[in-house]
Amino acid sequence: MKFPEKLAHKLNRRVESNALRQLGSSNDLIDFASNDYLGFAQSKAIFDATHTLLVDSGLQRNGATGSRLLTGNHTLYTQTENDIASFHEAESALLFNSGYDANIGFFSAVPQKGDCILYDELIHASIRDGIQLSNATAYKFKHNDCEDVARLIEKAKTNPTTTIYVVTESVFSMDGDTPPLAELAQLCQQHQAYFVVDEAHTLGVFGDKGEGLLQLLNLQHLVFARISTFGKGLGCHGAVILGSQELKSYLINFARSLIYTTGLPPHAVATIQVAYQHLAQNNEARENLRTNINTFNQQKQLLGLKPLFVRSKSAIQCAVIPGNEQVKKIATQLQQQGFNVKAILSPTIPEGQERLRICLHSYNAELEISRLLKSFAALIF
Image (tube, rainbow, N blue to C red; front, side):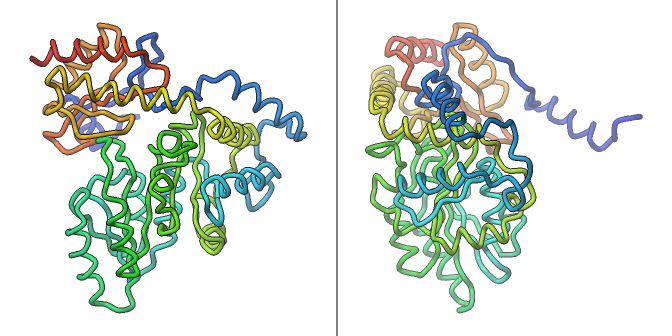
């Protein structure tokens, strides 16, 4: 059967703009691309402890067997959610199969018709998709701009029955930068708006025990919902929405991405629980990561590369190199020199903002960071 002409045309346009996505394969290059910030994804200790927990819990089965509302809510779910809620100083925690599922579930179910969602213009695609499924109206605000948020809040408040949700990320996945969280929280409190923060890229990276940036800033009690994912700092899979008991009950009843899908298998939930235990105990990995972030920022300053990079104190460092062809060329040259770095292309990000995305890890050596930046400088200058 012939492939639909409209779809073929869209694929051809991607080829013509040098933006066709393809699945990669594993390699032995020095890792500056993965989100495994603490090395937990490759931890034998976590792997072995997960197996032990499953055996000790009598959960030697491969699947959840159904949705959580039917047969998939095994005892490990409740224990893990209680532990996570305590760790994050939240009333409740609700596990989802992925960060995408969590954001789809939250934004499609919580804001109602007549409500207003204000979201950062650089917000993650999963939040955008959730907003599209919502019956609320939505407006984007300028990136990290509190004045623009205040303006939009005042506009939304002209209807006294409108509930306002303000949405941002604590670290943006394609920039690595951070919004003025304290100012945004205060603004929401002042106007009785509900503050929602995606903490996907701060779990494990910020905080005394890796709790995330909101807890480091002691803002957790001013946030209506926190969404954290486990595929980054925790090195496993799944996500959690942190909030009140009422919010948890509401999501169990109305979040379709939770209700109408098979639950995480016991092994995935056990891995989450063990990863959290290691997070609380493993100061060395976090300290190594913080050292590497500082080293990277110092080296790029010394090499004159700082103007190319988005300002970031996180594990995500991005150098803006406009044009899909140009940034792909530099990424390929660095890969040929042994560094696994990735080019981020339009339309994933706006045209003209294409970038080299470098992820730092606890296991990167100082010499590796230095060699990468020197190689990059030699290609740029």
